[in-house]
Length: 230
Image (cartoon, rainbow, N blue to C red; front, side):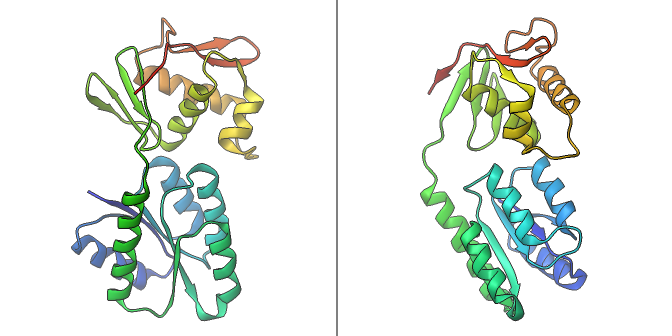
């Protein structure tokens, strides 16, 4: 099922859009402000994001910037008021795929949603699959399996694993990981990296042998499992 993240602070519009998108067969998560939208985006993998520009706590443009640092391919549809014409231009320049001015008709929104999803499926390249030990990892689609069974990873866990794999057999300093994965978020410390590594190891049952990720004391981490591209 296609998963959609709807970030909209107007309660009535948020309820209406979720109801109608769900009726059309989409699985919809909602967020009422930019901060909640950011959290849901980090925890889940979406096929489409519908994003209002003017929101409390964190604007749609700020959230769009975060999204594009992490994922350059997920389609983003911006919802804009007529008075936000310049923000619309900025949003498109920052990587939004389409925009819809308020007020808008439901049929037009659904048509835009279908077009964006169809376009993303057509343009999406063949995913690069990495195999190691009993695992297969699709980095673009954020999917990890072990002997064919799915293993659930959060968005940040995938980003961290993806970064280490792209620098396989090279020791990565914690400061470099913070910059690449968390973009030097002031609320994140190196302890956060340790916590995420522990979760990854637990989910991959690599806590004791460390056959996949090795700790380099006082420095950082290194991905050491033998990789094969398929």
